[in-house]
Amino acid sequence: MNESIANIRLNYSKQTLLEADVKDNPIEQFNSWWNEAIKAELSEVNAMTLATASADGIPAARIVLLKGVTPDGFIFFTNYNSFKGLHLLENPKACLVFFWKELERQVRITGLVSKTSETDSNEYFYSRPTGSQIGASISPQSTVIPNRDILENAYARLEDNVAKNLNNITRPNHWGGYIVKPVTVEFWQGRPSRLHDRLQYSLQLDGSWLIERLAP
Image (cartoon, rainbow, N blue to C red; front, side):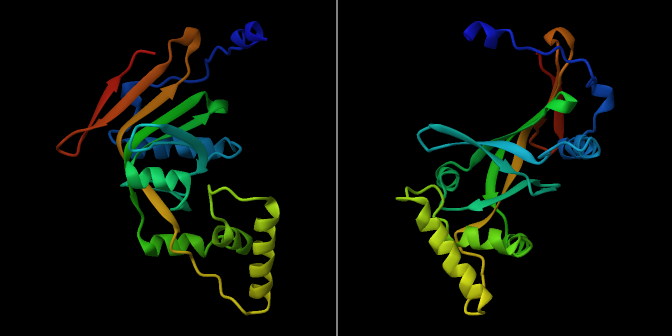
């Protein structure tokens, strides 16, 4: 089994990533790659790995969905009391990784994290399907529960109350958005013979971005 795993490999050869072809700003470069990913109709194109760490440096990673990109950074939404939320309270830094295998591309974003405004959190929460709003309202995310019935019963009660106009769904105070404000952003393009292209943007004190090539 281990031998067969070790023999799994692809020789990437679809595109190149050269300094002369990229934007001066990593958000603009991300948007350029994002538009290409959208045109390629990739499945779950906004899925990204979110890596966090506790105050004592114990890491954790999971897949979340990108829900917005602004000139300031990358936005996602979650339960603030979740495992990831507690990490970000202790240590407000994170790394995001996108892997678009069909394009043989990866983007790695490391930055500082803060909560989005209540206005932004409300706007996104109320744009979600009713079922997702109910799920966010009743789930004590990341806590131990005795069985699935606990969730399904709580969901059914709130759903019934909403249907009977006994409850309006309001965004819970423990649910909202985060924005990851990048400090470094690496764009990775697969190339033949593992000589991949890696361009890293690093934020400078004057607000400009230094672009450097990293060895693969």
